Image (cartoon, rainbow, N blue to C red):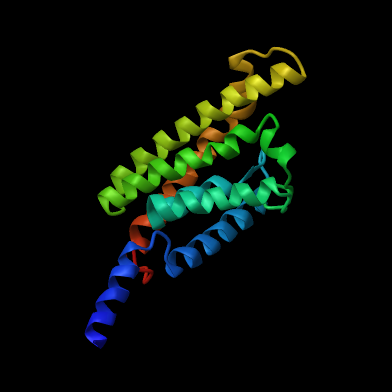
Length: 195
């Protein structure tokens, strides 16, 4: 009888969509993204470590956990928890002109997480996935920015928006990708959190 109970418990565990380990990883990953969004590196155009955290979380923990972490992060921002850069939050920040770049983190998490799962955190596939994810995030965020800006302030050219919102961040984001790939590749295989 106890053997049957053990099999039933094992089947229930296999069929669970979200495990306790998932909840812990998502909570810690969401906190990491928030903390990294508060860290601002002063340069000609200041930037945060927010995208680094998104790359690292998706690279380390895969599509399911990485995407859930980003979604929880965005949900916290929407309800007003100050998890965004500059310790800000609120629905108005998400639907504002730069909110598309934050929503674009979901694309990064899905793309990077999928490749991380499929290729077991190998460096070259991760680099390609992070670059593709970043390009999709840039494209989505830029289109969003142009739409919102046109509704609130008037039309603006693509070149101008790229100059404001993308070009200054390309090199810092590439550095973040390099760091996230190294972290995901070297540390990921040593993590004790079961899949």
